[in-house]
Image: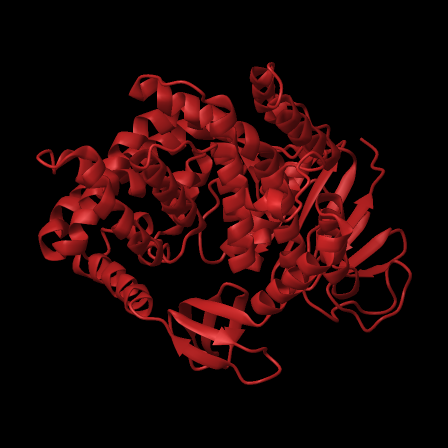
Length: 549
């Protein structure tokens, strides 16, 4: 009714969609993309409001942008040798003496005004200490429970992280709506002597405490607000349109935390819930529900996942059914540990031992169905848009065909790729008539987030030749048939007769350069030659090659 009074014209643009676009515009402006933000906001205002009202709305819009541009909220702190880094709703900040739960007003150029928000500050600090207590008192055996309960993933080993990625179950490591469901179950199951709608009242009042307890995880913010609104509607006998509320909630989160626009967690979380709302429109048995929800959430997150990481595993729809009961039990025990930490340490450590064994077995099996392939970006965009559009018709089930994207063949071209890596780390990927070859020397994070996506561009999981050396971890994704051998197309720190020479040490090229070599790839060189390609200038290098078989 309020929207009708102020002259909102829903016939031009769907109400929640309009607010969402305006919130995206405000987030773009707050995060340094003013032109795109102004265009999004102004166009939406002109489409939805008459001219006499637009001026007022523009003033409110600008005021909102000013507020979110000058305020930020501290979520966590990182301690390193270089100093303390604050993790805030606007990213990372250094050189500021603040703690978790502090509200900062100002800008980096000027001094921030700091206001401490109680009891949020205390809860955020306590969650870090409780997570450390579980890990330390168990002798390092409790590592994933802090991630499930407090959103603290720093205790998860690389091996565990790899196993969850390979099986496609990384979403189970994230704190999510399952915590809210378990929390609510406590009120509705263990208080049977109180009328159901009366039980909902304390649940509504206490639910917001889960948000700081999880470190303001986007998935929990969404789940808590969703549950609160639907509980209030149930108690008051009102109806809520799930899709409208989801869009409005996304807009609200963008206004409060503009950086969420670029957050993978935000994008995947809301994409998954959108799929569940659109595709799961009836009740099923528990086992069938888990499968249906898994399929629905995957449909709308798969294109983004392939674009960002180049990995997927459709077997995860099945393995989720196997692992979910254990995860739910772990969450339940973890929540009990909040009140009784010392008593729950041994049971939780035992359960994690069982979970680790299951994950190790599933990772071995799931490797064979792991797809390391990245279809063309245009195809991913078209597929995602079509899947969304179809869901607003009666043929929505056709959108499930998006699951076939990883199965589309990716044909490697004759190409040599040198990904952008830190100066001390080196690597390349080669696809040629002589076979596929990979070379890497560096850190685990660079291999996972730089090399693996490049391999996905070629759709290659098993290479013919090459060598991978990860200084601080192991390679569990790529297999090399003849490890340690090379095809002779690229020579590494070698003057042999190769078409391409790759020097891993800067300024190591000496004049005169040998003839017959097409390109010299090096991070930095003092020599000048048109054949020298410096990564310090070109960042990522891609070379189309011609090699005789």
